[in-house]
Length: 176
Image 1: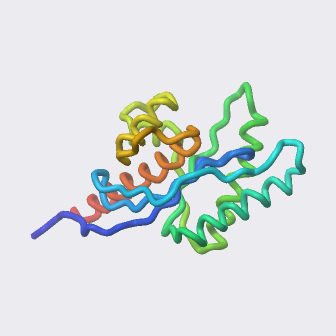
Image 2: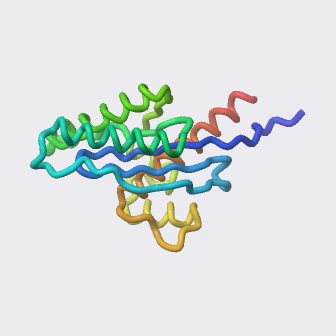
């Protein structure tokens, strides 16, 4: 009896949420050795001088366009991280994250959430890897001529790949 999971392609949208700049990355994931980059880029929320509602609407519209154009099957997001010295940053990021969760739900897409250390550990083996290591590793995994830039794009791709790897492990465990 074959205990290997079937080789299916999953289209994953990874989101590195930010209020000013949000990185997104869409991949077709079959296995950690078979990942195809579909598209990656940034969604801009706009200047911090603009009203909060205007910025959040820009993020919503940007994500709606990505979903409509690229048809992901699932959305993977980085969990909210809070540092005691900068609680305001976490609150602002929470606004953006909420918009992305709501937009995914409106599009009837499942969301998966991963901590920054979990993503880094899956991608590099080091839960405290610097952004430069994430960029280099993602560039190598996707066979890019140069690492993704800005780092928000590399982070979004890392989130998508992390979801693919973790989902595949769970599927393999379910077959046992």
